Image (cartoon, rainbow, N blue to C red; front, side):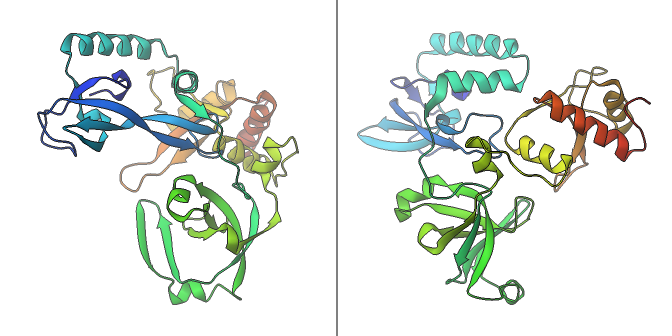
Amino acid sequence: MVDDIFEVGNKVIREYDVGLCPRGVIGTLIRFSEIYYTRVKNFGHRPGVYVNKKRCYVEMEGSTYHEITGRLELVDKAEEINRLKEWQERRAGFRNWRDEVKYNEEKLFLRELPETAFWEGDRVLVNVRCGLVVISVPDVESVGMLDASLKANLPSPQRNFMVVGIEYCKKHEAKRWTYRISDDFSSPWYTHAEEPDMELIERGNVWKHYHGQKPQFKNVLEEVGFFRMLGHYDEVRNPRNGLFEWTFREGLQAVQEGLIDGFSYDVPPLGKPTMVAIKMLDGDLGERFREATLENFGFNKFS
């Protein structure tokens, strides 16, 4: 079932086998979970804490269950049909994914992110005291002792890292903020650190951007990557098919015509690479990105 049609107070039931709450028992949806959209890789959302309609708490027979909302159904079937129709009409009115993001901000935003000592992109000195780490590579996450090859790259008990993420939800367990640290945002691995073991070396571009200071970049592609990470861009549909599917030739022609500013390739672990056609929200940055894209392929903007 569609998550968006549910509201607090609804009478709900789980009719299918998969689920956490009892099957076939009528219950009451008492509240939804929360989700943190951080300052980077936030799908274009304003950073903050939002209602997470994908997960909810249901009271059934005197017990409370944390359930995936999509596994539930409304007891009132007529109301369920009406809400589904309204949801479909609303979705049809969205011009692009950014309209949906705006809707979520208006309806689901709860509060600003909590204050933390460090922000994404900050450079920190970390006291490496424990060998137990989480190392992440695309679609693979494992927990284990820090291996000899990684230890060999640690010249001393302390090391310069970049904060690449903040795990806000883990403060409830440890009573202090947990950070993901790595070499930089593009690194395929990360480990964890907590505030008592961290010391600020230098504020990064994320902190500078949100505090009115000018971020520093080596080149235009690094600048584009930064603002894409903040969600300051649109993905453009191919006018030939109405889809987000492009061939290389079509993408390059679209850059020459000014329809898009540039493109990148998403490479999934399985399947073929997919071209992403990009239009930056900042027109000046978009123009510089377009010039760099054309120059990279042996063109200039007057060709």
